[in-house]
Length: 379
Image 1 (cartoon, helix red, strand yellow):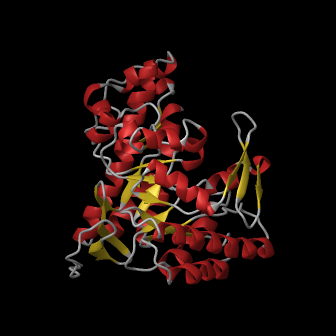
Image 2 (cartoon, rainbow, N blue to C red):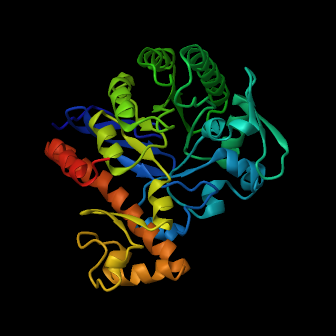
């Protein structure tokens, strides 16, 4: 069903829903560095680089936005150094939008190297052991120096299995940190967009509480944090189905760090607009490739004399020019080109999947598209 809201203001932050099919929606988000069409998958460039790929590779794939990691860029090369070089876009030669996270995932992933308090999170650097206090205000300063288009507030991502009392306390802390970040950005008057991060662990009522505490505040978008942190897939999907529709309809919705093909179509079916995950590039480096016919492990002997393209339905550089036999040879010989060609293809698959989802929404055929992907990727 086409939707044509009157929205003449196309400044950064303008979000226009163009079509809906059930809860799935196709939309446009305007930023200082260009338009983002959703649903969208964001390649992860943790340290200012999507591993094994150059910016021209990403432009050839028509990636509309990439993600950088605030914690890692703060430690190396340093946000102040990036600022002196004109910001992250200029430093890494990327002309399109960038989203930077807040370091909140490192609260989850580095439990032995951090201490949490009302003030913020004190990290012990995994590089040299030095100590660094990430307050909400400090995180906003770092992200301003990086000069990303979309920035995230400091939050606490609790692990699967955290008890109710701890999770409830964490929800309140995440809300207070988000409001402190909002206050800093209100004084900034820039074109940067600040998304709130909702939490709540694996308690549906706490997820609802988190949304209620943040939804009335002036955030430019809303994220679902704390998924894919060790929980079984059925648990994640059940809670996601309860949580995603609670987010404000008229703002972009972002599911953080979740992203195999089945996850993407499940999230899109529930009204999620934006996704990121290291999975396509990490798995590419380990020889696992995603195709229109399902997953392929290119390390297998079965491909040693297979002259067909990796995916006959894919038009990426890898599939246009190289055979499965050659890709297997590169991987077996540990040639660096394997990392690039495999990563190119996996990102092409993920980016194309979200583009195809958007077209299916426009055509009112998303349910069938979802069933197609679920048949190929049952888990």
